[in-house]
Amino acid sequence: MKVTILTDNKDGNGLKGEWGLSFYIEYGSRIVLLDTGLSDLFSRNADLLGLDLQKVDYAVLSHAHDDHANGFDAFFERNDHAPLYIARECYENCYDKVGGRYKYAGIPQGILERRADRIVRADDDEYIDEGIRLLGHTTPGLEKLGLMEQMFLKTGNRKYIPDDFRHEQSLVFELDEGVVIFNSCSHAGADNIISEVMQAYPGQKILTMIGGFHLFNKDEEYIRAFARRVMDTGVQDVYTGHCTGEKGMEILEEELGERFHGFVTGLEFEI
Image (cartoon, rainbow, N blue to C red):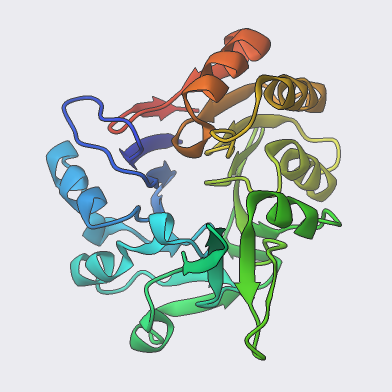
């Protein structure tokens, strides 16, 4: 399989980046678009890379935040057939608490109704095609991580509860040698996510974990402990960028050694 980073925080390969993430994934004869970043930049970069968005068979939203979902209207204008798979609990209700105030940080408002004909709600464990699987979180207590990050979900009675990332899903690809995991921000913790996938694939190798790890706001002690937990999972390779942050990238490279790979906009790699 081949992976191309359409947008990441870092400019690269002659392309502009932004605070967001988008992957173009070629898996056999099928093409999957995971996320669309913060704007339509992903589509302009796809053009510059010679990648045809009309050829995408499936689109997936990793989680309900704006820096991963804001380009989907642009995608639908470029692709007239691919369904967009979102988590069953994905709604327009994600907020960050900043300076004591709740700030909307979710998917484009109105898109669920506006694009209802293209959106498919995925169960917590669902195959979208042979060898392509979506998995929701099974790790308990994730609301503690949401509270730590000051991320909240707005409920129907206008109350705010700590985000337990029920709207986040992992995209898993099955290869002959093992499995490959994508989770764009890994809010539940990349180490937890790898463990969740290991439970879904007992006895199989976890070849690669790909995504942002949300370490940009963590201290060195936290990051090093996290890196050791990732090592303990036995994952063979890690590709990361976006919300991992510069310090996080440097420490992970020190701790993970040859298993670590950083990505930037325009990077292409094969697994």
